[in-house]
Length: 373
Image 1 (tube, rainbow, N blue to C red):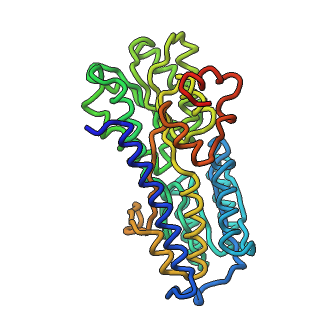
Image 2 (image 1 turned 60 degrees about the horizontal axis):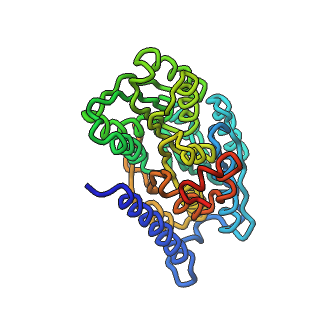
Image 3 (image 1 turned 90 degrees about the vertical axis):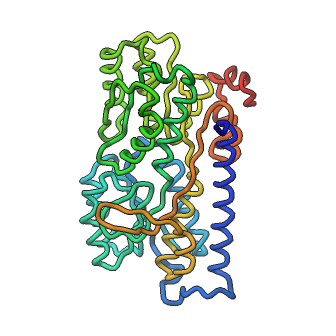
């Protein structure tokens, strides 16, 4: 079995290699001697519509939107713009925002769908209007032109593997609670399938909960139910699909009187989650490179509008299937398990956070203990 640190380092190298290869392909596609057919598309004066799902997930407002906006500007000599709307966890609002993008005749729409099925009608309307749609982070149904995300089943596998690795020889007898995401989010099933591929047969899964709209308050209420059902001291670990829920799960455990919080997983590498990892309250989170996902989504969107088919194909080398469409061109960005051991090599090195951001006065001693100074 490959040691955990070695696996993490390998995935890290893959991420770096992907960034380098994509940059090289972009330059080749845009170079003076290239055979790109951009003349058949639009120039730099273009508008990218960006629809993000909520404000509760810290990364969307802090990273994804600003990164996409900057990359579009860089790719279009500051002539291209991003028209942004956030659904604030409302499926109805996202549909209204989508239809306004169509009415305003944006050139391409990047959408992180709150509900993959309900968005399909809007995707079809955009297609009928001649507007390409690229599914971002979550796989939308309907006739989308491309999909940009992470390997979401791998996310779940990394989370599940972290639990079994930490429990070690005690795993077979260990009781584990699963706090899954929103069943309307297509990624939830993939996270869950990945986690179960590592957990089933290895641990005793004693309770599972779906969390509508990924709301931390719902996760906290469900964790209280699990504690009552299983018994506080009998819970050996908690699979939490993301960081917002992980924080709520930890609150419920501490309020119930846990002297030591069992291993709790997360996802997104939110700042408060990284600080919980530093403090030993949260065992791990899955770090997904926002930089790679967001900047490459912008590249794909601009390439599609400008008719740069060679660059578009180079960026979307993989394919995925949705319930309504087969062989969707896709880019799947690798992920990394973030623990105390690799904070500096991941989010600090990538410029997501500085040591000062993480090691505030409340966490200075914990940071010093793990050499993060």
